[in-house]
Image 1 (cartoon, rainbow, N blue to C red):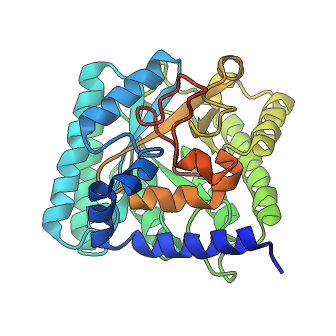
Image 2 (cartoon, helix red, strand yellow):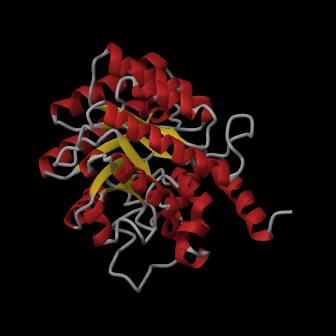
Length: 346
């Protein structure tokens, strides 16, 4: 039998995930100070201005950023259209402010479940606008029922529409991810690899953390090999476009395994990027680490912060050490968790 804290964590995780699609949960988070204090550890703030400030703080510390306008499962086209405009405003602000950042979006926020064709046109509109500003757009991954649709839309944008400023996220806990990366590598797709945070059945995802870790290391090597095969394209100095491998983890063993393989095969340091969580305390905050490898940070913003908590929760104990750190500001550091948020990966 699992220890009681693991069982309690699983139960609470399931409950939080069930909230991620509930419209009333947003009102709870924004209207209840305790709930918002928790969410704000991982979310930059409610407004675009909050996120831009967070990006600037990150940039000043030598860290590139990804601006992530939070939100999933819009229920009508009006919400989807508003999300499109929000992302375009973010892109314009990044360019206007000279910030080292790109953007990340989830397709159900743009009406994938409402009107697929309208969603396709909305993403094309975003990519065209971002292309004009020289900014990369990452199609973030959602739970397993949406993987096929997300990858299909990526291929439409990349192959049929010809956009080169687009990439995807792959989740290592899914059995299918090895084959997905093999196919994506043919186009030299820029992939951010995370472990995965949604609750998935054993039929589609590894149930054991040890198996997820093993698969993660294997997929990292596949992405590094892909980069070498494609000439090791580098990240742009302005931080607006990433390299092929984006290693999204604050698991030190995964990071060290990736760094060891980079050194073994001779991949240039500017041809790989580590996407890290500010709560990890061992990656983005370490100046010595940033000298060794390119480092970036996710910067979520918006009122829909519950899904971010869902993604972060499975690794609360690993990342924060104890629940007390989630509910309090770390006074031992000058790092302000309200200004510089955490990531959406494990």
